[in-house]
Length: 83
Image (cartoon, rainbow, N blue to C red):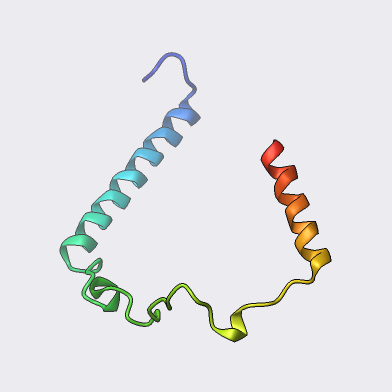
């Protein structure tokens, strides 16, 4: 028995240590049984993500800014660069 903690704290500590041991043992078994295998599509890369286009964007992915929007953006960039 530890002299600095109460009996209830010792019981709680013992229960915590037993739970941690059981958890680590089950993780080890799951790893050995192959539950964490990476043989799916993620192991070969991500083929479902399309390749990037060139430096030019698709017309539906770009927007022309008005002169007021360009000036507002330039002001925002200046404000950010000052900080």
